[in-house]
Length: 144
Image (cartoon, rainbow, N blue to C red):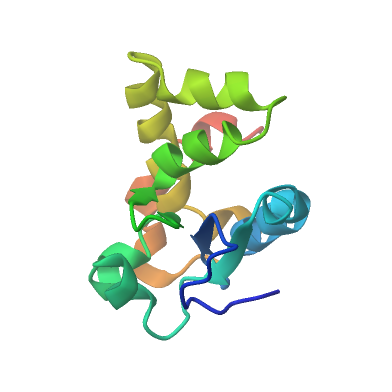
């Protein structure tokens, strides 16, 4: 994996993902080559200098995945995924749907919920990030 975040004319962009999150790492493993073949580089959010490069605080950096395009634009979360999906001809409709008015707000809300709770999906809850107040929905799914 090329984690060099220096400018390179052959790159279309950098996908910054949370390398400490099992869900994020699994997602990168599943679709990584698809976007690498299109000129994107997967780079951990934990890479020194990532926050400064993206113009974010360290706290904001870890809220959701980031995409920096070769022209310097930065997209985050579902907006980044919508852009990435539209670079693949057979995923273009999914990317367009994620960015469509009306659906965009719903997809952002859903993505941010997943991003906030991403450590819980692999059973690695981190202190305050996984307070019991956030898991009130779990009682609904538990079977007696």
